[in-house]
Length: 401
Image (cartoon, rainbow, N blue to C red; front, side, top):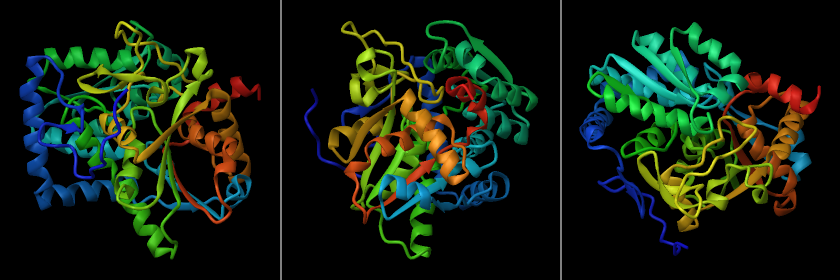
């Protein structure tokens, strides 16, 4: 059991560590590519031209800024004063994933790489990657577990329509973990001309830092809009957590505030069933996909199979910054089951006219189940990371509608 560590808001350090987490645990072949990526990124951050170009595409292509929607009927159901949804579902391609892919495709062009690879679970990152590759004329290959290919057929078609090649992975659990495995194998072989656009705050340094920085636009806009609306600092900040990019994007700008922060993982069929993806709730420290973090693994250190009704949360690891935030005590990580997520999806659809993706529906499910923890005076902000179009067929079967 790790001892609680002091919270520090200026990480990662120069070696890519968030306290005891993070780092680079990759084959030697990839070290030069990671060093190049970090060099190019740090230089781009200081370049006003890069910042201007990134902001241009976020606004005029992706559709930023996204809005804060006040969910008044949901607030009454949960028993709080005000409840706001940060509407990442309104972005082009339907989720927050486009923020990161736009930033990384600009880095790809700066490195003169001619090919991009990506992994995807729910398909939203794959669609966002295929979209930016089409925009910039870059060849795109997306790895996707066969199980996810079957449950996310709409997004598979969208990727193909955008000109990407979708490579079905039939090894292991045939889900997100295995898609990442295959993407890394590809990258090792083709590192000279290929950039790997990782879709979450996972992987070796500098990826957790880069993806966090690109996604932090979510929290920055939220703070700005709350101030513009004359709303005081929220009592709670909430988001779902798989690999953790939408959540860290909302959390990061609020880490130095007094707000309580909650990350909701996927409890699947229940924590005691063994069929879940609640890494920070029920996992242990290990190494997965190039970084040290919390991992679902057995007593021999072998990675366990994860399960979630949501393909985007069906991952046995989590970003190292989340592992650090848990260990420091700054963020509380909880979980919601498949059934609770379905309840959350159905409730938001019926009481606010917004159909969420299954991923953020976990956060709503948790809030509905645990409404006793909140006060009537509380203000809550939640990241609605994606829209539910991709999940309607699966949800229809699950709810027998």
